[in-house]
Image (cartoon, rainbow, N blue to C red; front, side, top):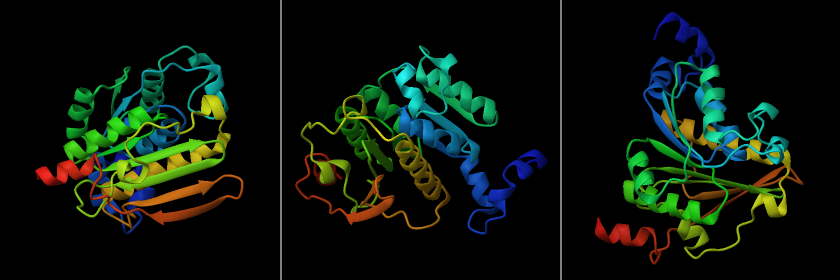
Length: 252
């Protein structure tokens, strides 16, 4: 690390749990973030600012006026622009030392598999069941740890799934594998700060994993209630009959 980097990341380096070695680990890491909406717009700035060396971001949506109520990285000038492109520019202007690859597309299964094999961890910042299901299946197939988040109305949730851990449940173990209406904010609304709370918590969880510090709380579903400001946690169990991860386990 040169003098500029030592100064930039000095507040991390001062932490015994991180230090220079940990900061270098972040600089060598690659993170895939699927979704640049409310959750992604909260998580990505902290991942870039913290010094993650390579960020891969994917979103096929465009910035809309209604997004500005909660997706605070975007401005009125960004309306109509692809979110992934606008986010790439925003992040690059704040940390030129981070390599940022933007995919303005809805990733199909093949693309998800390819990008996950190159990532150390993936953040699911999407807003629909179909994408969450696809991300979960790709995470299992590629053995890529997954930080999953969701936010709608006043309720948020967060969970870390690690397919490399035989005791870890997967997303389908907790929520099933059949399509369901998981609450789109365009239909049900969302409390503006909620996406920031959950998204930054996703970033913190990903950074802890990359650094190898703290308790990852693998398989613990953490739920946040915006009307009370309280968190609740529930330990999920791996489903031996899970249609998603049990098949992979049998094939190992």
